[in-house]
Amino acid sequence: MTTLPEACAPPDVSIVIPAYNEEDTIAEVLERVLALPVHKEVLVVDDCSTDRTFDIARGFGDRIVLLRHERNRGKGAAIRTALEHAKGEVCIVQDADLEYDPEQIPELIQPILAGEVDVVYGTRFHRGMPKGMALPNRIVNVLLRWAVAVLFWRRLSDEATCYKAVRTSLLRRMNLVCERFEFCPEVTAKAIRLGKEIREMPIRYRPRGKDAGKKIRWTDGVEAFWTLLRHRFSRF
Image (cartoon, rainbow, N blue to C red; front, side, top):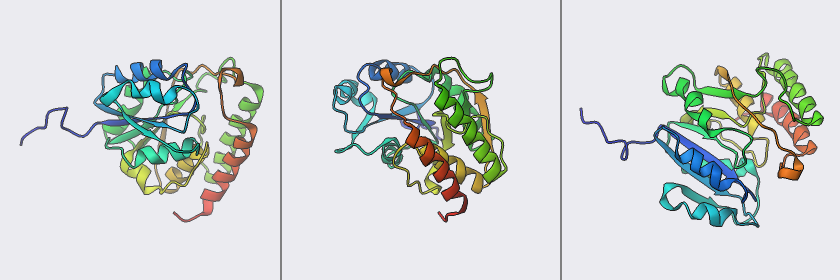
C-alpha cells in the first residue's frame, strides 16, 4: 500500500479561527497555531472586521485558508462557513484572542485521532472557577452546567468552553444553524442526542474583560439556555 506524504494527505485537524476586530492578537495566535507539531490546516474566517484583522491574516499567505464575510454575522456563522471548507479529520475552534493557549490543541485532538471518542471538550473549571472571570460569567457557566444536567442527564463541568474538538464528519451530521455564540450549546445538545460521549480534559485559561475586547454579552447567556432547550426536542 502506498502512503501519501504528509503534504498530500488530508490533515489530521482543521483549526478554525473566527475573527472579528482582533488586530492586537491575531498575528500571535496564528504564529502559535502554525507552529503546532500536528498535520493541520488553519482556516481563518474574518467576520467583516473594521480594523486590520483581515490584512494581518492575509499577510500569512498560503499558510492559512482565509475566508471573509461581507457583513458581520457572528461566531457561529463563521464556524459554519469554515466547516464548508474543512478537510481535517477533526475540527477544533481557536478564538482569535489569547484566552486559550493553542499549544493545548494536540493533546485535545489525540483521543479522537486514536478512535477513542468523537468529542472532546477542554474544561476551564477542573480546579474551580479561574481567577479573573467576571461574576456574571461565573454564574452563567454554573447555570449552563445545571441546564445540561437537567435537560440531558449528562454531567459536564464546562459546557461553554471554546475548545470543542469534534470529528468533522460528526459536526457535519449536526446540520448546525447557529449564528453567534449559540454554537456551543447547539453542539453540546446535538452531540448528546446523537449518543456521543463528551470527554473533558483540563486546559489553561486566562479570561479577558470587555476593555480587552471580549464580545460575549448577558443576552448570549439567555440565548444559550434557549438553544439547549430548543435542541433538546428539535429535529435535525
